[in-house]
Image (cartoon, rainbow over all chains, first blue to last red; front, side, top):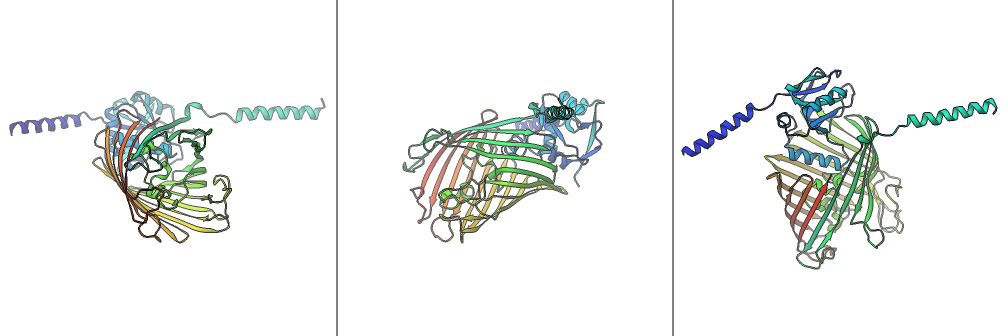
Length: 144
Length: 358
């Protein structure tokens, strides 16, 4: 019995630590982009290739992260609602049915920030610590 | 040189130079090149299935895809397939097929267009028809997508050449995808000199179709497809009869379990074909995905005892990214009046496949 309690405690502690290690994710766009907030569903649709334009008609260029950073894990769980394998399979189906290409993936968050800073239609998600004056963080609002 | 000729020469040179700088090439770094290759092995337990009587390897698909963004709103998508280990030097030496060749124009999210030849947007699978890395089984469900191999007639043409209007619409927290199309439809292949569907229609009536997929929330999607056109039957092209097919689709996923089911009905010349399947899969680990599918078809409602039922039990193994091994057992049982395209009423098939994509 004592062993079971110990194992449960380890699991609970591990879970709490994992949560505390989660990143604060910032969704960023080009500083000249007039967008101030974005609905969670719109963000999901952007990364699933189903929303291609901002409200002002500018074409959206989504940026992904190639590494399994804390920001990416958090973003995928919170916004995309797919695990890595399901997301990859989704895009394999999209590519081979001629529906589009997945977001370009960057090796580091710094590269993603630089990309957004130099492309007006770009959007990305990074750890909030990586923000700088060259990009603008926008608010993610709940779907109505 | 007379002044007028000099001016004409200057103007011509200007037009040529302006033309060469104005029609600049696409940035090569933006072109996407994808493809896939697969190898199958199929054997039956009865030994005299004409297709798999020896147990055979089959280099089924070698496909190359190009996605070329012309600008922010216009792109060109092509998919060339080398089917059955193409060797044009021998009889029945496989095919080279343009699976897709279309222009994609995005006016807005809810209003986009495709112009050209494309796999018909019908049901869950047709646009993925030969893309074996994109589905877990060795073959897509034949009860709907290749019912002609089950004693029925094709429920809809594999390709459509024409115009498609499509888009995505948000309805509060749900998502609706739609596509509406008009095209040449299906030509009569029974005549002595059949026409290429991508080149010319063999009747004046165009084919129409539509598909909607509604996603009330992320884990569930319901869909419906419809196709209607006229098809000439028999050995002349003068007898055109309506061909109408509709299908319903349901997909769902929870806790790494996935369900996919479809039901389709097709009517041509007073004969109805029915097809349905249900498929369960479980993403057990990143490497292993076991699955089970039940398929059932009644290829002709005017004939009793011609049903075909198939149980498929299989597994996907992904040892590394982009490489999939598939193994499945297919148990087939048919009614007493089965169409003898495959000689045995009941038989079992063993299928192995490997597919790679890039």
